[in-house]
Length: 171
Image (cartoon, rainbow, N blue to C red; front, side, top):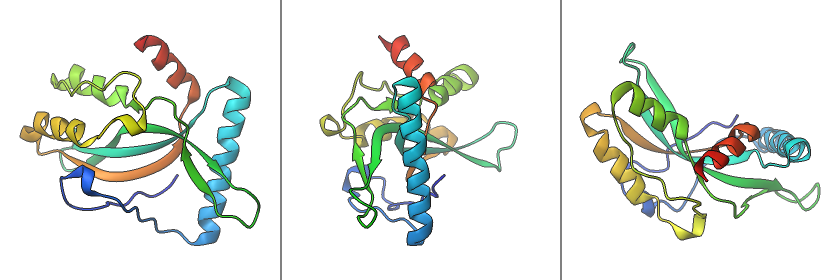
C-alpha cells in the first residue's frame, strides 16, 4: 500500500494541482507492478476493476479512543496502471468508470453518530465534477467534531465484488 502525503494545508480543494510522492524509483516500480498484477488478476477472475485512486480522507477519532486519529477515504476513482515497455515510466490513468464514494464510512457515521454526509452524485465521472463543494459540505457537517478532510491520495486494490454489489444496490 502506498503512503499518502498532504498536498496543501488549504481548505480550497480545487486549487491543488501537484501531487508529491516519496518513494525510491525501484520501490515505487515494485509497488506499481504488484498493483498492476493484482488489478489484472481481479479483472480476469471477476470481470471488474479493483484498482482505485482514493482521494480526500476523513481524519476522525473514535468515540472510544478520542486521542487516536483514523483515516477513511471519501472518493474512489477507478484507474489502471500501465507501462508501454520495461524502460517506460508507469502511468496511472482514469478508466472513465463512475467514481465511488466510501459508502461504509458514510453509513457508519449515520448509524453510530446520526451524522448525515452530503449526497454523492450518481454515476459520476471525473471530468464532470469539482469535489471541493462535496468536501466543504462534509466539513460543515462535521465541524462540531473538529474532524477534517485531508487532501491525501492513495492507490490500492479494493475488493471488486464489494464494489459490484455496491453498484447493484445503487441502481
